[in-house]
Length: 268
Ligand SMILES: [Zn+2]
Image 1: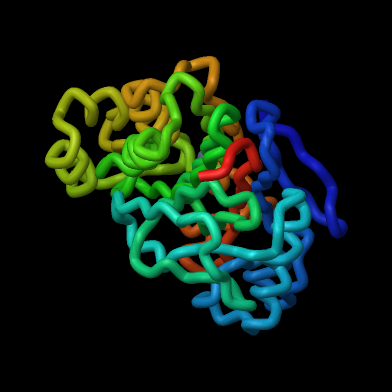
Image 2: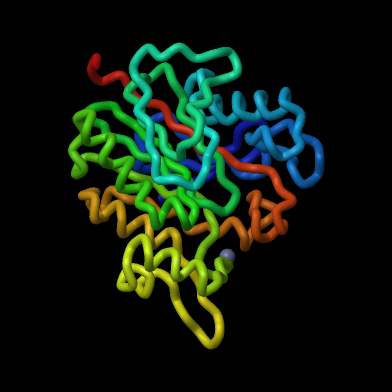
């Protein structure tokens, strides 16, 4: 179950299924002042002062109880997941891994960050190995299978899928995610028509895509038990004053962050 905590005067969300330092940000608790970014914006490409973005990321890491050594990516809606080795050196302003959308590590000195504003942030952890993952999953990365790819990379480093826990954070839900025929065609091309018909509902003339259910199915298929998956019930687009929503703001918005740190369980 998801629950709210107060930190730095703002709201941060956590999942009681994830016994690792982690947090999902909302719009509050940060230092950004431009109205559409206020106050918690963690992305550098939204017109914010870099110093504000760095401070917001630091606040989010502290809300999570994680370190300030932040690893992130230039997200491109891919299904590419990187494994960050133990002892990777992190520059003062964090480490940008480049063009990919999922990050896996077992190094507890690192904080993995993904950025979203309607796309789904997914945090994964395994208490047996201490390995964690942070995933950015919009519809395209979702349909390309990034959630399963993160599980595969964790498994390649020793995690059993049955031990992995996952939390899908606040994102746009089917209520607000009206999509076009082009998106349905793209999902069919990537995952087939059965998958598309299970997760893209049709009523009268409109199509609504459910990226939460899509990711949940991919995680289950990858071997994670249903009881190990936590789904945040909140829709970012339904609550644009609480969350940054690309769709609700027509693109004039800041970006939220989700972070997680590994736990030191073994040396590897
Ligand atoms: Zn909604």
